[in-house]
Image (cartoon, rainbow, N blue to C red; front, side, top):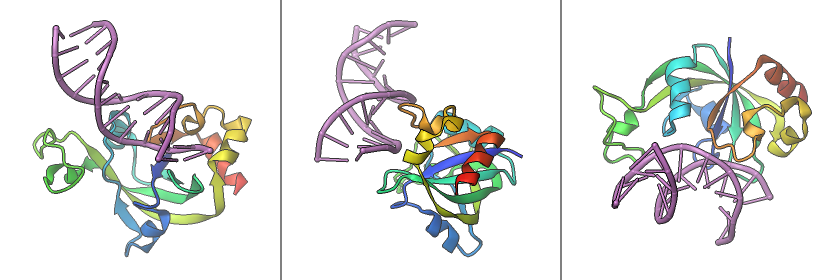
Length: 152
DNA sequence: GCCAACGTTGGC
DNA sequence: GCCAACGTTGGC
């Protein structure tokens, strides 16, 4: 069992949007960063637990939990010339970008804000709080996971 | 809306 | 392979 954190701008896709999906499941499309791609393509496994983080909004922070519902497969939006995420360099025969499916598990009782996460010495090594970090998907250790959930 | 941090691109 | 220019992320 592995643990992750994935960022999304709630104006684009929020935990409530995920929750409202008929199966509670959605594909995590549009990631165009190689480090994040490699994690989705090579490392994330069915059933891995994921923190849902709201970024670029009034109250950035962790808002809930989801799990990996399908392991890495090609991001088909990259094949669609009409989609903003289109990438002509990515083809079905030789896909450049990958995604996973995630499934809603639950909301946290409250948002654990970025501000709060930064204050905790237990989370000093969490990529999220490192200066200038821009990774949209990152690993979380079991200890970090347990600590974060203990805050909620 | 500002801007710091960082990744990518492309000329040389 | 260097590095300046540019685009993006994302907190504030």
